[in-house]
Amino acid sequence: MDPWRPDLYARFAAERRRPFDDLVALVEPAPDMRILDLGCGTGALTRALHERLGARETLGLDRSAAMLARSAEHAAPGLRFAQGDLGAVGADGAYDLVFSNAALHWVDDHPALLARLTRAVAPGGQLAVQVPANFDHPSHRTADDVAGEAPFREALGGWRWGDRVLDPRAYAELLHRLGWGQQHVRLVVYPHVLEGPEAVVDWVRGTLLTAYEERLGPRYAPFLERYRALLLARLPAERPYFYGFKRILMWARK
Ligand SMILES: C[S@@+](CC[C@H](N)C(=O)[O-])C[C@H]1O[C@@H](n2cnc3c(N)ncnc32)[C@H](O)[C@@H]1O
Image (cartoon, rainbow, N blue to C red; front, side, top):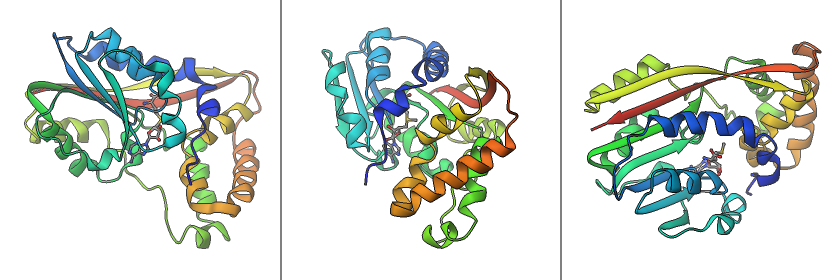
């Protein structure tokens, strides 16, 4: 089943746009770029990337048919979209830029993943990636806590999200070991001011919780109710609610 809902995801489009803009700003524009955008979602930001860099060709790749169904709205010359798994990318040296905003954390084993993405980039090419690093926030910890409770633990067959996103320094070391000559890695806390703590449930429902929905089937509804109750008991009942969201931005050039 495909748990992604473009409308729910789009509710926080303005907040999600900020790290995208910061990531694009790290890219050094070059003429006639061939770009691969991994986990492109609806393609709205892929088009912005394509146009901002004046690219020759951009391919947006995503696994979700529901997200890609919106990509026709973002058609532009040189821009195309395809359904596929970003974990299986293997095109040797085919791209001047491999780009990914808020998607690589859906795939485990980042040392192996980044090694594959390195091979997909042409000599002199660039890598630009943003991943959330918010897994120590109650919004994310609570999902993991509920996944450890019965009956969800059994329904998930022991699956847990785990610590797949590395520390910023570990990414810097990895990029160095993979032979990237120039690099910039930084952690940013994005200050999101939401209406109230209940908005965090919708935020997380549109992204992280899709991984649980996909695996839990009919048990997802009670999982979500338990998550909501536990999270709201843990967050301060402040209006507006300040949601500090940590993200890692990394850029490298061969
Ligand atoms: C948080 S959204 C980000 C979308 C877009 N990059 C943006 O910034 O708006 C994550 C996207 O990654 C996609 N995704 C998750 N796992 C994937 C995989 N293994 N291969 C390709 N896409 C994947 C999801 O379908 C979703 O559209």
